[in-house]
Length: 197
Ligand code: ADP
Image 1 (cartoon, rainbow, N blue to C red):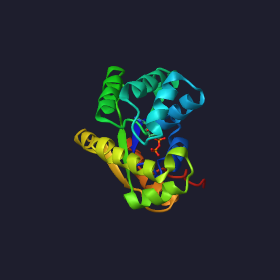
Image 2 (tube, rainbow, N blue to C red):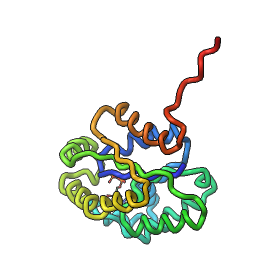
Image 3 (cartoon, rainbow, N blue to C red):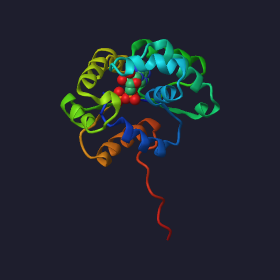
């Protein structure tokens, strides 16, 4: 299965993608994680990306697309992928579509985790990452609403979008996600095997 996880920073994508990965057993493609590891590895792309990330702005598409393209070439991605934090711009979405189409690997589902800004700000303030300072959070939210949120229309038009209410306990939210995923797989909710007679 190939799916995209969309949602503002602090919506709980991290917690929920961990669960979803365990449930679906597919590779995790988190561009945020890739970028942080490029920074830690002191690569030239990492240094460039850090300038944008520390300001709460999106890293330019070419850097992101090279990184994701390289990852998608690895054999494990043939079986599926959870795209987390990617695509974040219309350009990235179109590039991903082109790639997947030319490889005969269509997208199955786009999950939008919806959480109001006030809740996001409260959640992020407790996290302690360097880009979680209030001014940077505000900028990241602006970037989300102006550049990433428009992707929901793009994927609605393609019949791929499912919006998930991100308010509730992690278990409650995951239940909603699981339902959306199961519906798309056409398998219905998973049941435990019938008890033996
Ligand atoms: P969050 O969802 O909390 O913002 P991420 O780890 O997904 O956390 O992203 C952290 C930062 O990395 C973003 O603010 C942005 O600067 C950069 N980034 C991550 N993914 C992308 C992407 N697909 N396109 C552009 N910038 C990205």
